[in-house]
Image (tube, rainbow, N blue to C red; front, side, top):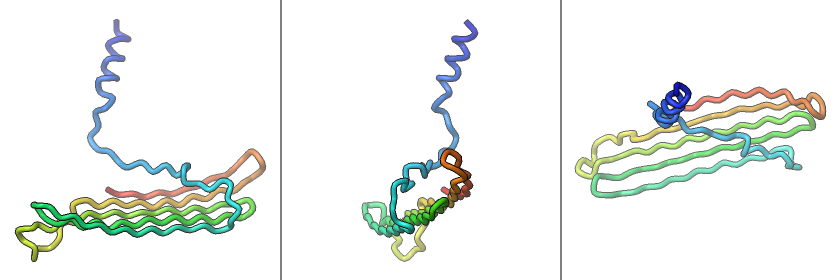
Length: 127
């Protein structure tokens, strides 16, 4: 009976969370079979929406750089997203930040032999 009660408590509280962060899966972003030494991607987007409440401005930037040598790889990822709001009834007011998110990720791999790889990484993000 105790095991069922504990299992029920675990399942009942599984979805409860006070705060969530965006998870970045860097393993999906690796270029394992690339024959190039340097790969880079920079992406800038800008969006604007307007409704009865006001105007939303949405700049967005992403960065991906990967440098590959014979036995070492260096990967740099970054991104920033901002949503600013200007009320329609007070267009001269200063824009308010509605949402601001950013991250940076640096990863270094060094092949020690065919089966062993040394890896170090650092990541920072805010929301």
